Image (cartoon, rainbow, N blue to C red; front, side, top):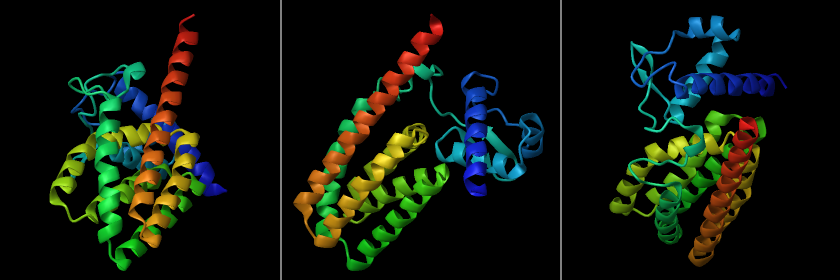
Length: 240
């Protein structure tokens, strides 16, 4: 119970610091206050501040420079919350999802065919940890384990071109994952698809794996549409 309560406070600290970054109070490249100063400003423990900074680092809003502290990362050119559809130099959210659909359906087919038994067991362990993180609402672990689950599948292909393309997409997708996993519906909707994909590995069924990955990515897109539309509705209501 205490862990859940602390995570709830951490989520609030994440939201507050992110808002200060998005509003321009702390600009890209600027150093954030020390942990102790943030504790005093927000009235929370140092543990909560440290967890929040790690979450913000994981989703691309904060950069940790060893020996120097936490700095605002070059997270995105746009600072308008209503347009957080990853519009970077003309690239839209749906562009990312179309590329992801192509890469990950191909990757999962190759991975099921090529993965060793040991690698499949490793994927099962990652999924088990992901389920545990969702039950505890540990946002940092959810983000990192979701990324790890999908990245491992691509790694199992042994195709260096696919692996390198995925690496180039990861930085932007960390921002996407961070925003999506703050919504209860999204992280719960990821558990069952991951389980079905994993079963396809264990059954060595590449065609079913492709179909399950396609369904998973379609659900993700639909969830983000709902979040986006809900955000627009709230913003419209606030403007009235």
